[in-house]
Length: 426
Ligand SMILES: Cc1cc2nc3c(=O)[nH]c(=O)nc-3n(C[C@H](O)[C@H](O)[C@H](O)COP(=O)(O)OP(=O)(O)OC[C@H]3O[C@@H](n4cnc5c(N)ncnc54)[C@H](O)[C@@H]3O)c2cc1C
Image 1 (tube, rainbow, N blue to C red):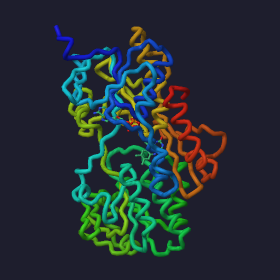
Image 2 (image 1 turned 30 degrees about the vertical axis):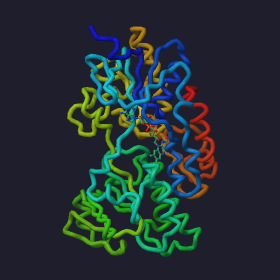
Image 3 (image 1 turned 90 degrees about the vertical axis):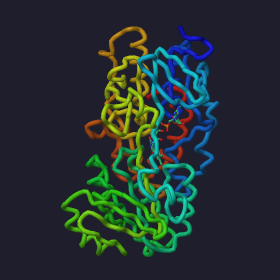
Image 4 (image 1 turned 45 degrees about the vertical axis):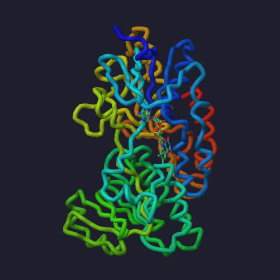
């Protein structure tokens, strides 16, 4: 028998009070307000991350992205202001920072993503200074804007890691905004804008890639593929890339002509000097998830191993997961959470009633990427697991539109705070 002083018990425990955790708790309580739900979340603040790109481009105030977590915890849910440190799904417990064990009947893992700054030598030392920045971390969005404003000339390099990342479009969005900013300021001719990606395309869904390829060409942005960032040399302002494709390795000489100062070292390594370097850091599940039996076996990134349609854990039937931390192979976005939460809620309630999940709706992989392409212009990419476009609007959102910019800057934040986090609608 456990001593009741050493543990607390809740019917449903949610790890993480971000987009996914709050949305799920709110929807569950709308279905049944007598549910006993606890949310484990260490942060006193909640951030609307989709606007970080706009903050980095000087067109949105950081303070508008921040709310107090206590105002978002749905009425009826208990907030455990602490971090989860370990999960023992066989004994149905989560251990938090002070060592207390929280016992659960049902668990929802929504702990988001971890930034692995240490995975690229030189990154941790350089981020936030000497021209190296990332809108992925709110602490550096202001620095991005400062760099754009103070830019006088040189290579402006944008890159992303080879791990999955949240909002796959974010490394490009700030690039299009930077290019537009330099143009408006009359210094576009001083900037060599380079997008170096480990991927093989600008965007995985053809319909939207077509628009982005045209933009890159028309606006003289140099896009190079199969380039994996392996090191930053802050003292020399150089980024080192490994070339991951043989064919690209053979064509580096052609590339050298379009990228000022680029050095070639054999067929597998290039060094590109930068004045500004914006990157997305390598990303994975938080370590306490990686080290738990809930993680996908043999996958070093440690995502929570769920069925991609039901969001139920493949082994532990009383465990569910959604949002960035889950193994579902969709575009990791808040928009995906919006479609995942109702599916998870219905399935969790079915499991609680000992019903099968068979006739419940499934999650089809919906993700949405609002690709800001200039100040006042946006392409809205919406698609499913099969990369089929899944449009919400009755017009072609693969074209750059001012209305979509309005959606991004004004309507979606309103929807997020007032509808999604309150548990309304999909
Ligand atoms: C630059 C940028 C641009 C983006 N643009 C868009 C966009 O345009 N559209 C879009 O839909 N999405 C966008 N996103 C992605 C979107 O913000 C995420 O996909 C979404 O927030 C995922 O929700 P989540 O709940 O899984 O993670 P989060 O919202 O990050 O929440 C995770 C929560 O878990 C908590 N947590 C972490 N560790 C623990 C622990 N040990 N114990 C307890 N709690 C813990 C964290 O404090 C956090 O509150 C963007 C993200 C970034 C960074």
